[in-house]
Image (cartoon, rainbow, N blue to C red):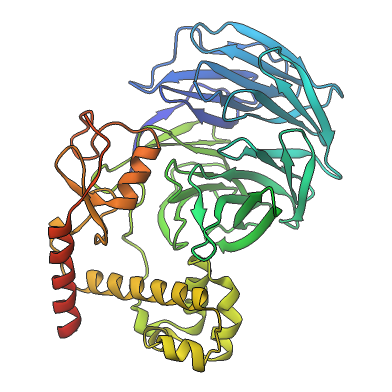
Length: 478
């Protein structure tokens, strides 16, 4: 559940962007200012607002440490600020003098990217505060940028609709026409995902555009393969151009804001709509999740920034929503099955399943033999992947149709556990969920919020056997 807990109304014109650090929220506006707030009580810091730009401020971002803030403007500059006292550290002028639309720090704070309206792109060295590399996109203005979590590459989006992948030497690695009417924003999840077959780790990216669409992509960056960009699926829900999108810290949610004045929170694994927030009275221009707390900020042309909090009992990866469709899997149409395949990264099978008229009932009845003999899926790895997804769907059906004992549910995901482990706080969690929790540099208990004295996870075999016996019983009577 997302609850509106605060509204910031200090800007005197459109809010263009908002960004979180671990302790602060920064917002910028057409009113030429950047404002910085404490996350403790959402009061403005003593040095705020930051003034220095002579025209509208389009974008702002924190360095990974949170000690430095960058902002860029129509005045053709990117300014760098010390967040501890508000001092100006540098004024970086775009070589072409063109309005700067977007700026981003690399994950190690080594570089700062600045993209401009004339398509020029600059990589600034943050130690020397000197220009390191520069380049240009083929057409259009640069309006979006996102770094990969490892810093090996970054992606830019342009007003002509292209997504371009660059390495850290500013070499163009890949270009894709993604949105017919122009890209407006893009983001890369900090959590890599596996393709399940070859063991490759993909980076998940989202892009949105003037075409009202949000697209999910998978990027593979490997020395021996180069760069591969795979379209995953399209998330629907908005009725007008989508201006902003951002992943949650665990990669399980994507938030988007639109000209339709709505904010939609999507579940990335299924494509389901978790929440629709409609408190803004004008276009929603920006949205961002906090990295270390269950907070979401949304900014609008109504001059306000809304702060939302998620219920800790139902974390970011919530798997239910009040208005979600209650159609059971058995009643799925062929189109529903196609949508499910896309959400499971099985989009390559959509044509095959449609050709064989696979609806929900047929999907649940698929076996290893039918995949081999009837659908002619020859690869053992692909058959195993499909069967695993179907089995997971069957388990979800059981857990949805009956009341699952609370001790069988992971406290983080609120889903039935498959591989429970005991953490140092004495509670049991799904292994993957707890490993993700720890990998995000969280060192506190998800249940008590107290520090974990150890990061060791011990398999809970007793609980795993109990869940297996319960599942067998449910399958026997279902």
